[in-house]
Image (cartoon, rainbow, N blue to C red; front, side, top):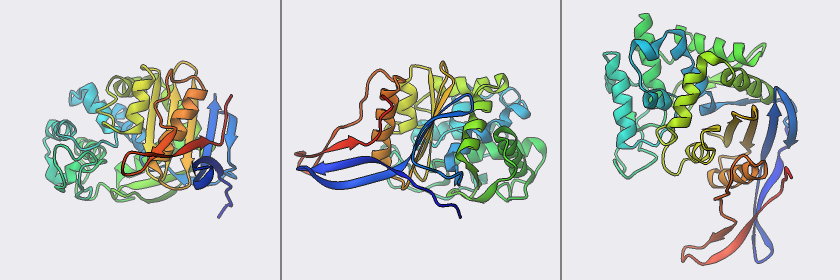
Length: 314
C-alpha cells in the first residue's frame, strides 16, 4: 500500500476556536499535465465509484444503442447519473428498459430509498437506487448482444470485461484494480493521473460528444436537486461537465479551456466537498458566482461559526 498525504482543505471555526477540519486532495490538469495539486497522492490508486458512469455509458456508442433504441438526450444523460430517484428519474429508467423489451424486475441493484424523498418518501425499490439507470443501460447492452441478463454484474461477464477494457484503453493504464461498488457492479481503481487522462480522452473524442451534450443540456436529469454535479453543470452555463463519486470524489471538465479539476476528500463529506469545490471553481473563474456558504448555523438558525478554505488558486 502506498502512503498518501492529504492536505487540510477546509476548517470550521466557532469563536476563533477550530471546530472541525476536512482533508483531501485537489488536482488541476491541462492536456494531461498536472498544473497544480494540493496534497500528495504518491501515485496511489483510488476507486472511481460513480465517477466511472460516463465511461461505462460510452458503450452506448459501440453498439449504436442511442439510435437502435431511439434514446432521448434525457435518457442518455441519466445513464451517466447518480440520480436522486424522483418520479421523473424513475420514468426515464423505465422508458430505457421498455425500449429494450425489459422492465424494472430485471434490475440487480439493491432496494433503496430515493435520495430525494419528495416523491416516494421512505419506500424502497431497486429503481429508486441512484445507480438504477446505469444498471438499466447494462441490461440493454446485454440484451442487444444476446448476453446473460441474470449475471450482468459478474466480473467475468462480457459486458464488465468490455467496461474494464474501456477504462484501460482511455486511461493508458497497464493494469487496474477491481472491487465491488455499493450497487453491486464492478468498480475500478486507477491513479489520479490515469483518471485525468481517461477523461481527457473521453471528452475530446468526437464520437462521445453526444454524451457530453446530453449531460450539459439536462443537468437535473443527470443528478437532481441538491446534487453537486447538477449544480456545477448549471452554474457552468454549458461549459462545465461534472461528476461526483462516493468516497468524496468529484471531477469537473472545462470544455472551453480543456482542463480538468479533480477533488478527492479523505471521507465522504458531501457538504464540505461542495464548499471546497465551489470555492475552487470560483477561484479558477470557471463559475461567475459562488453560492457555497461561508457560515454555519445551529438548530435554531443562529450563526455559530465560519468556514475557511485552506487552499488558493489565486
